[in-house]
Image 1 (cartoon, rainbow, N blue to C red):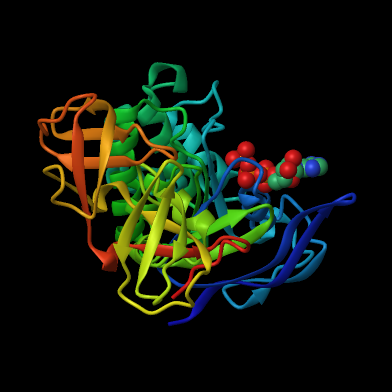
Image 2: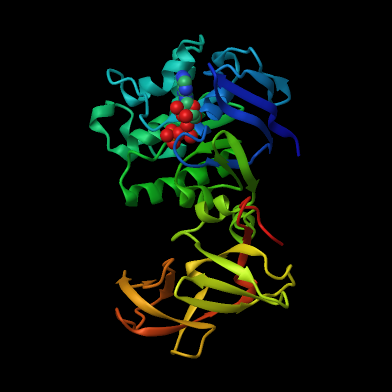
Length: 357
Ligand code: ATP
């Protein structure tokens, strides 16, 4: 496999502000990469740097093996797709599609043929004579995609392309974009703050915070083995529960600290006795059992049901969120037992947040 995008030690300063800190990325051809992280973490800066819209301060950036430092955007052969679509309102769909080819000197008939081919792939053939204002949000997004595809770029760069769409259309479009990526055997970098979008669409997820890469890898590897508390809390929905805990004297169990009460949980591994740690338990990894039958009991604070799933919040400090499939049969004020498989228990160093193996 050849590397399509390579970043080595990339830093970006806006004046004194350090927006990208020593970023290293190696993206193979054909990969769908998602950049995720909270607002301000630097994901758009990274994407815009790839597009050449921002100049990196130090480091090396390569696309298809060629060094991109100092190369202007139009010479990079990458296509950006924005949430705002950036369509020309006074042009029809067809004109929007052919425009970028026409300004590169492609003949009208040839450009039109290319537009028709792309439109057939993206399901726009019947809309070629419409203006952007006559299209739905999803259709506009498809035009924006088509306009990128028609140029056969070396990489597609997506900047939160679905954030203007309603929930149902987002789900539909994320499948569509991923299918298109596969069909074109494209290399895509996709910025989103939505971890579900990242997990479902990408082959490789990059989690950023404050300008650094906290962790990168396959989506389920990040879910199963988050490198630190930040990634653990960011990947997964509802978010992982975190409880302060102390490793017991023989090192074989951990005591979860709920203030007034403590709960003992067996550890699948030996740890230094007496050490303070943060225990992490995913809501979907807690099983509700009868009072006295689990590892410990908790009072139920409140219960929410979506029909297919039940979300239980314990009346403890800190609270625990528990997700059960189905309707449950639990009400506020009940005392329930909780069973937790030690294999599903994550432990983090309380001071550094790093995962403890
Ligand atoms: P969001 O999800 O809110 O779009 P992001 O992760 O994409 O966030 P960036 O837009 O990359 O974040 O911004 C990263 C940081 O750099 C932010 O703190 C932002 O304020 C800062 N920043 C971005 N552009 C500039 C600029 N032109 N001048 C100064 N600071 C900037």
